[in-house]
Image 1 (spheres, rainbow, N blue to C red):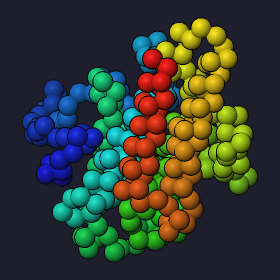
Image 2: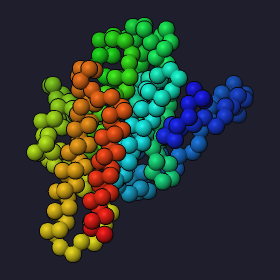
Image 3: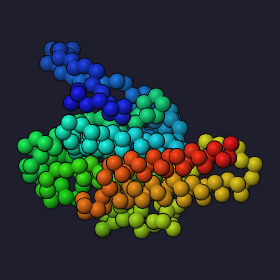
Length: 264
């Protein structure tokens, strides 16, 4: 795994094998410290994190989505043998000092070319809410499973709702929750703070502010929600490929930056 090299993968610095203070054998992998913690802490902060950190803004959400997509695209398409992460979730996305996102924790990762990839995966552990439906039926592992997890993370960033939230029962899921509102009523399920981006408070009148927010919904948030929905489709064949996801999010980021330049 230390041969994996990508700007959005948390690289292993070294390993450690020693004895702890009690004389017990101690082994560890050493990674770079991530001062902004995990995406989980930002989406669902406890008291400590809330007192220490500011809220997300829209460009940060887009950038994190881009970083994670780039990492998965590398794992799925640009390494010697395709790598499946198998446990992608917000707590395994760490944030650097500049809010760059790094995918971490490859404890369940599998190389697609290995014999284990053709085995029944009913015993493979993951995280409830992020495991793709076909894994629950014992299907073979594939890159489609990571795509599903990625789609759920996108929807979670937009709504600040965990896929295991108590409201999701009796057939309602995070996917269907957003899908039912998409696109005309999407603002009703979004995190209320998502449209508070840098510079909005400097507008001289509320009309100009509302116009910009409406534009951001059309060129950024709705397309991003659509990516989340398409990646988290129940059928693996209906999900997007990570190459296409990277292209789509890059377009969204350019649209955001171009629109904001018009208001400078």
